[in-house]
Image (cartoon, rainbow, N blue to C red; front, side):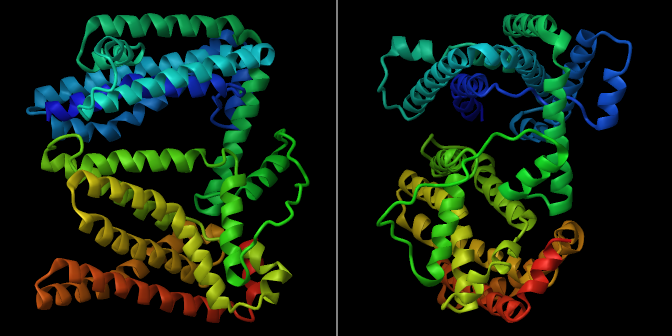
Length: 483
């Protein structure tokens, strides 16, 4: 277990530098420190000096961030050999993270002010830090994989860069590491006090943006589209960056015909969303690292760790698909949707396939990494078939539930409950078929293949049900979605 923790902490300096570099390069907006409009009116209208108010808001945000850390203490309870070691690990981890969050909070407002006049300098500095962090991550991968691609002298420097190395020392309860992080946090808050006399407008604008997004998430079931977000921001009076209203046509661009046009449309939506392919690429890299570790690429890991590496991504996939808000109103209100020569079932099939690919592609990359590390092709082939079929079936289930409860507000309560009930109803035949096939054939692989086929059949049945519900009543569903 200690070996695994040492492997994890090897990546901390690089991850911290990449995080700080991205923060510095994108420090155009202040953090939303006000929790409500009443909170802002009370604090801004009080007789307290603005510097005291901003300092209090920073410390309150730090307290809220630290309150979320107990969710990770279970890892220490699993990793520690005794309760004393678990408590010591939790305290050291919490103190190190608290000091680091304090540094980030303290630097936010000074960087925002500096970005008004020195934005190019900040972008260059942030990009440089991120590049150094990536070099540190590459060195960590080289060391963990015993590749020896980096000279030892340079590797020791890249793997010992602060403040990540100070955090690693803090994880091991090193008092000098705590002292270094504490001094940096004091300096960061001192810089905040220098600029805090006139930052209410920036803090309120970011807070209003955050409050608007939270309100919209409560109404829509947790997932937002860019169009809904922009409309809500305009209604709240939040200034939006000017977006181009026209795009230059590209002669000769190939658009797939029929229902496959929806796949091309989903690709454009993924590319044109804010951030572009940044988060998909990050997810892809994380999936590769997790798959490599689960397959034994980082050495022999304890069974508990391997189980968590496999269970955590699967749990996230289940939660994302259960909470995801299905929206078809824009397409159903479009006359071109109903003028298509492709059948409604075919269009829904392509739509669910396109949305499933966003999850299947990183999952396939992780399974491929696990298969290479474990030296087993069956891990990739069987895992991809099983999980791809399951993800697509859950997407089809979401379309089916949408045709029963199209109102986004209801999806947070009855809709999610209905999804859970339908999911359990879908799992029962899959488990039965898997058990029968595995017992009769005496091969788990055959059981997994039959279970995947069962999931595909169930998803197809749900798509046919959704198509029958939408056929001839599309406008009614679109109007119900807007309520």
